[in-house]
Amino acid sequence: MVSVPLEVTCSLLAWLVLYISFCHWNKHRSREWSCRLVTLLHGVIVTCLSGYVTLLDGPWPLTHAGSPNTSLQIHVLCLTLGYFLFDLGWCLYFQTEGYLMLFHHTLSICGMILVLALGKSATEVTAVVFVSEITNPLLQTRWFLRETGCYHTLLGEVVDFFFVFLFLVLRIGGGALLMYAMVTSPDPSWLLKAGGLAMYIVSLAFMIEICRFVRRKMVKKYHSWTGLRSVGAPVKSNGHWTAQ
Image 1 (cartoon, rainbow, N blue to C red):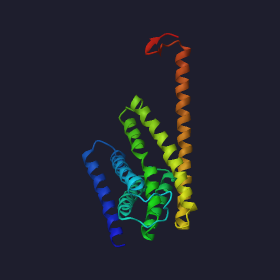
Image 2 (cartoon, rainbow, N blue to C red; image 1 turned 30 degrees about the vertical axis):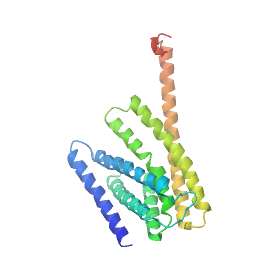
Image 3 (cartoon, rainbow, N blue to C red; image 1 turned 135 degrees about the vertical axis):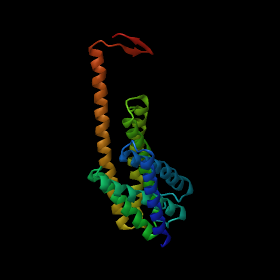
Image 4 (cartoon, one colour; image 1 turned 90 degrees about the vertical axis):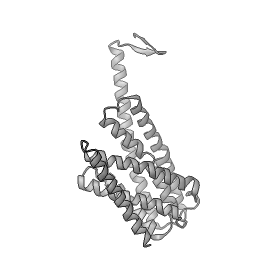
């Protein structure tokens, strides 16, 4: 137990130093730019590590919920716990996020602390980290595309599509399977089960926001298309411009 707090502290300091370095290297950019670079890097690293632990190293979270923590699981959770502590502190200091995101960060921190303290259930929590963080790099890429004026391009459309697709399939669909496995297993703590249920409710709230975004985007595209049709603007047909 002595090494876990030390590892979390080192992780927190590492993310903080990385953020300060990004601020120094990008003096002409905003603080949020540097913070999102840290978030993007964390998302890529932790997605790869948690994916390896969940899908390859094991044990399988749908059948071994509540099993003892492995050393690799502990390392991954310590790394991401340090990041979440950094990001929560940054969000509170700069007041950039709403209550829903702050609640999500608080639940994540409490869940990882509980799992590391109990010495079990890292199997399912690491899987939750994987399905949650896999969309984060896409979300940050979308923000950077907006900042650089490249969002309204084919790349922006591809990023939006894969973000929505992965969120619905993994975070909502995969999250439901993990939630069911955790609740029906007798091994996980009841407190962890309650926290997991709260996390899934937060994901559903995010899903509602995403569905509203998709609806607005589709309506906007429809109006744009019908507007072009009404003024007789040329549209593409079989790869060639033709008047309608």
